[in-house]
Image (cartoon, rainbow, N blue to C red; front, side):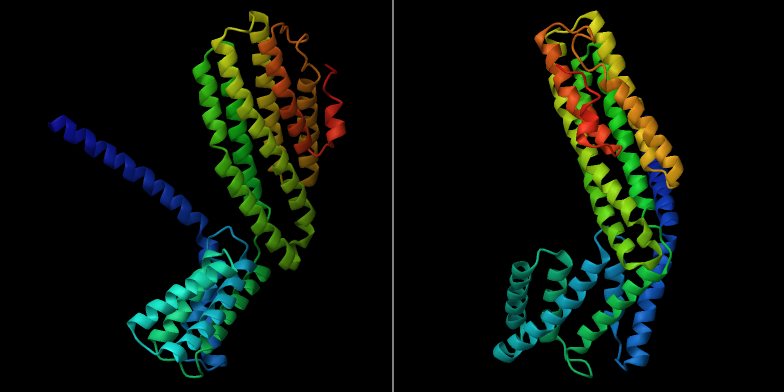
Length: 377
């Protein structure tokens, strides 16, 4: 009993240590955004109170916090959702207040109708929250000095301050997408290495593990897409970073082909498990196919280094290296060259060829250029 309790205590302590390390790392990375949010919200509040003369302009501070935030959604969209949702919510609440009067049941009706109206107009979560909240406050709370639309003006002030912070405070829009794309390609490399191990050991279970790992890449793809949308917006509205828009466009194009390659890796892993179970590969085919997949994983590592590189010259050098490594894989993607004679093995080669083309296109090559690397069947 005592040993069970001590084991539970040790696991709890280890869990707390891990959480502490993760929390400290997350807090350290959030210092600059926290400073930006603090200055922005306090500045918006002070401007609305001392310049515009609004009493207790909480919505100036809260709207700037929502507009900046830690979300990867584009800030301009969040600013518009806050400002328009706030204004429309006040208008709806004020109209229903005159029709229904003040009370609990009236507040319930106003909130219900406001939420339905918000969902009809836009799918944004912030827009729905702001419209519903403002219409509810109009019914439940007395209007501030200056009328109910004072809150709407405060929301606009907060949004404008958030956009100014985005434009003026240095924050390289390439940094986070490059970190994310390296994480994604590192995971694809692990998928390929696990697939190669499944081939060389003739273990279908490992092929299924590779399939599960490949499927788990989808959240990384979605996160990178969201990060790129936000980075595009920063590069558009910030004069200091407009020169990076072309680089972000190229990274977005590469992501499209990386996503296709990951999808093809899932198909390949699923088919590989069946081929292994049927013992459809000869010793020569196992050796050549396993080595080919390992070489692909190494090329993906090179591609990860290239796309995460900030310096243009170094990035292009690594991209050329990745093209050469992937091209070398592509030139032997023929069943006869790999010692594959049975139909099941030939099917694996046919499934692998599109993935190599996708990865070559992710380096910046055209489809026709990538296709030329592959031997005719």
